[in-house]
Amino acid sequence: MKRALISASAAVALVVSGGSVATASDGAPPRTTHGPCQYTQTPDEPPARRVPLPPDPRRTPSRGTVDVAVPTSQGPLPLSLDRAKAPCTVQSFLHLARHGFYNRTVCHRLTAYPTLKVLQCGDPTGTGEGGPGYKYKDELPVDLPPAPTDPTGTRRLYARGVLAMANAGPDTNGSQFFVVYGDSALRPNYTVFGTVGADGLQTLDNVAAGGIEPTAEDPAPVDGTPALRTELLRVRPSC
Image 1 (cartoon, helix red, strand yellow):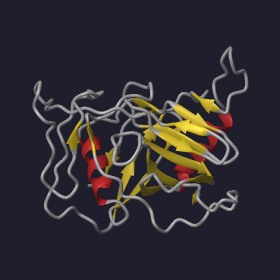
Image 2 (cartoon, helix red, strand yellow):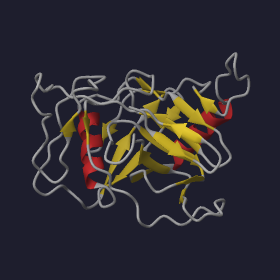
Image 3 (cartoon, one colour):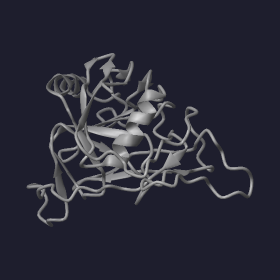
């Protein structure tokens, strides 16, 4: 399932597929958790790594922040997750982190469009098509300012340092996420659930400066595999 980020000047597919450990049997409906987040199996998109559906308590934690240490092959990428902005997204991310889903995974995509500067991670297959075997609802931002580069007024500013989910359309969040290394203009269709720390911004700058791997078809790409291999060595929540 393709997930797309649309900038003012280019369409950028952020691909995430899903599945779950408890795969629905033939003919059976996909399992869905009974709490407010309603994590739902995606049997037609098997998991890249086996994980159960996340816990979905009656009252999803929705206050405070959670720090997550993310050492990478290019330097630290510390994250701060905001439960108030996106409680179901934070719950899922922490669940995947605690099960080692993100460990030793490669950030497979870097974009360098004038209005879209992101690094995309979270797929154990490294192809842009892997996911956890489940999906869940959007928790879309309502407080982002208009993007100053967009004369139509429809796009919002996803500022440098934002942490957000990739998706394949409404309510298709899985495991893939993106971090913004330069102010970007996007429709507000992507759940914002945290920020990148100062040390992480330096790491992102280094990765971006390394550029994107050229191909025979495009010797100077603005969208593709980072030239500097960026592997998430371990994703460790503080709680």
